[in-house]
Image (cartoon, one colour):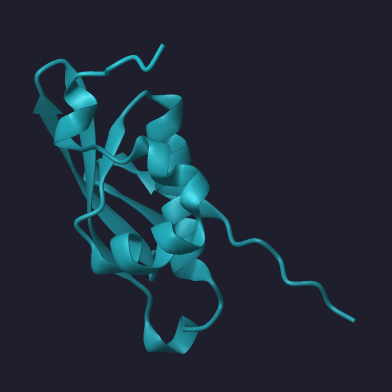
Length: 109
């Protein structure tokens, strides 16, 4: 019985995207500055029909969110896959999502 291997996702800084090794599936981003906050706007996720159903879009999102977390970036989920599918299925990443409210942090203590 074969186990499903996790695909290798690579950061292609020059093309502003995370992609599979074969460059066929990817998530594109744009970097923005909002005051002192650096924001990674995830604008497009693409998986070719020949690779649909393998979970690649989710792996691409995880790579982007891990990168953002490691570099203290906030995420703007412009891409509908990220906002409507990935984040509802993976709420543990929501703390990285940028909002106007995150500009000022209010203490409840």
